[in-house]
Image (cartoon, rainbow, N blue to C red; front, side):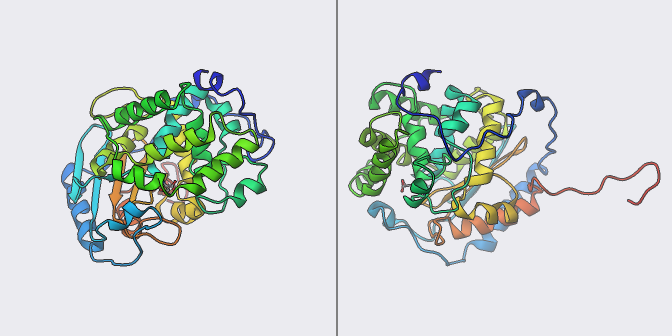
Length: 357
Ligand code: GLN
């Protein structure tokens, strides 16, 4: 347990995750059925149709609490579908680079889960929704300082504190290299966004310090916040994000490079956490409308994962009140229905031996 050994001070939970539910054995991975995406031309057509349908929606506001993000062009609109066979479909501004922000939490969590294992990840980071905003301090106070899940800032800071390495340089190298393996190319830092957020991230530093006071953090609070701020400032396109998402859809194998980035059980656990917490306090609304695990970021990106089929990424900077891209949610919902991605949708089986169809 490489990360655990570098984090002797983090203690297991006394609240948050319960112990009543037995962990699911990995043998369940032997029996899975997730169907197929439509054919190449149909995906291309639907993607461009979705772009045309939602391009002119002007609702929402570009995030401005990180000054560098306030300059984003609100008209930018990109979407990409990456299939698990490595085929990628782009539409709109799919080559526009933006900072990954909270979407990084997904992939850093997967890498840390790989190090910690199923049980310790659940104990130390958690899997339950807070019902509160992504940077809520109240959620921490209500839960004995337990971060509750890796997708809110508190849980993401704990996750980053548990990254292998005894120095912030080593932790940052692990994250940058690991997320680059998900993307299949070297991801670089947006220095302007990093400096802008570093100058204004007092709240994240306070959250880290608060968790330190509860003995929940595995590393120095200010250095942890700095590494976390860097991970949020990595630049990606929707093309990158869709391929990264497709890696989780493909049981942890990057579909373009063929490299195994995480184990199948880790990909599964990451998707479960996204389904329950990826859109913060709106995760229930998201699952009800879209029916897939997803993760949003404050710069306007959203990734969605269809297990066994592929990844979908959208980018449009204007956000709703919870910090989720308005156009991204609309396009993802429409595409989820048209591409047949909702995990909970099923048709009655045709009965061969009598009985109603
Ligand atoms: N870097 C941002 C923060 O910590 C990420 C928030 C987000 O994307 N929701 O506030």
